[in-house]
Length: 99
Image 1 (cartoon, rainbow, N blue to C red):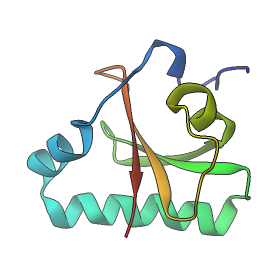
Image 2 (spheres, rainbow, N blue to C red; image 1 turned 90 degrees about the vertical axis):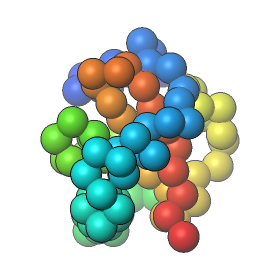
Image 3 (cartoon, one colour; image 1 turned 135 degrees about the vertical axis):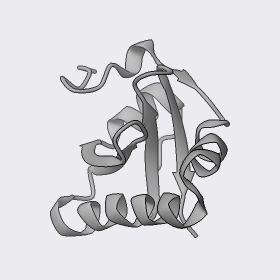
Image 4 (cartoon, rainbow, N blue to C red; image 1 turned 60 degrees about the vertical axis):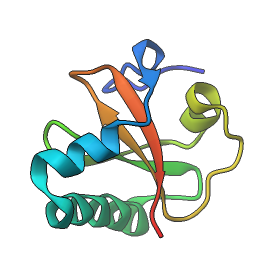
């Protein structure tokens, strides 16, 4: 699979600490708002074959192929409400499911 031109996922490691660290850094309200915005982007411009990405350093959002999850995280199924958290600084990713 070809890597995204904006994200270097093949150099990233899987983390379980990105989300808690993000909450500690900006607070739960702002962290949840960033997640909502990424999920809104998926609802407005995404397709069943895309996954929203929350970029921690900028609180930005993007869409990537859901095949990324299968390739780099190992899950073959992506459900609605899932997003990938990405840290360029830490070279880390975490899959998150919004409840």
